[in-house]
Length: 176
Image (cartoon, rainbow, N blue to C red; front, side, top):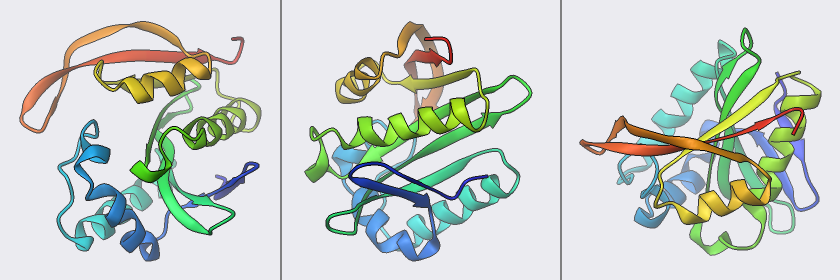
């Protein structure tokens, strides 16, 4: 499994525990975690634990998460990756988050495009999907920009922060 990808402005590299301080700053922002299925982090150890959990999933080839590093500043500005990898059905679910200071600058689209390209060309997947809360308009704009197809709303699909939430399903096929 790949451990790093490059784009014009970004370096996506497999998350490391040493990234915890930078990622904690992002994951402790309530605006960033608003649509994530985690509570706003209050201590850096939560970031370390999350990175360790993601690393365990990566070792089993069930997921992989990258730290998004802006090349110009060498600063970690978010994370993205394959939340679940299903090689039997040739599909994966993607996820991403960005520090608020970097919203609206095309970084999310650039990072996700590199995940799409790698999934279709190297992993030989047929389908990528993203599940997004209907109120998460910024994330929906990223998926629309990358020509994902809205498939419908999964009603009360999962429990997040103590309540059932709807999720919109978006997908992109290798043939799209």
